[in-house]
Length: 215
Image 1 (cartoon, one colour):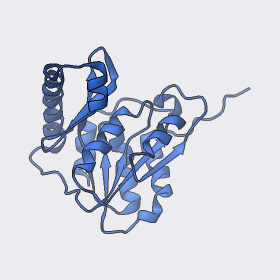
Image 2 (cartoon, rainbow, N blue to C red):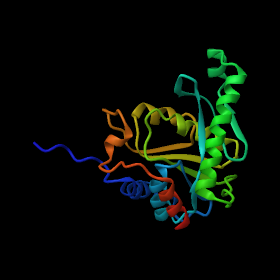
Image 3 (cartoon, helix red, strand yellow):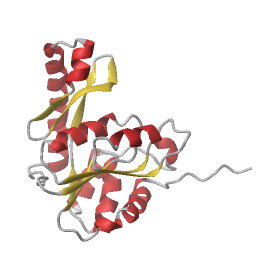
Image 4 (cartoon, rainbow, N blue to C red):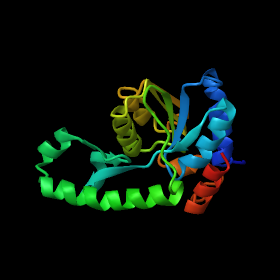
């Protein structure tokens, strides 16, 4: 007996299908698509094409609790944005020195990615826009949660989280912080995003640059 086909051929295929689901946003002048790099970039490129909307990368770095990195104690983003989860920090008794050390390390990586992806170009304006934040999938959702928290400080009119596939519990949790969540597939048996793609090869920095330069 042959196995059931996987939902998506690759990230571009996922982006085309996700874009169709978001067609109600097509042609609206206030819509901006933001990709979480690197895996979200090929998806967002196709979404933006179908919506005829501008798009860019949104580089955000989660501040993981040392030894439990999937647990976020905050996030940083471009423009000196820092969001701290004081509930986690206080509950675990994490010293500010530790938070600062993690933030410094993640800021170096954030700056490296900003320079690698955008060069000298300024990021697009977010304020008062309907922002569609795209990734290739949601497992724990911690990076997407960090992105939404950071974007809130930039005062968009609306934040829409859009992914091809995600854990049902994660998509549900994100609905409490985003204005809308669009998740095409929420399989009951979910262990990793990559299992829902035939081709889930790593997106490289060069591929990100090529897609951004082709906008």
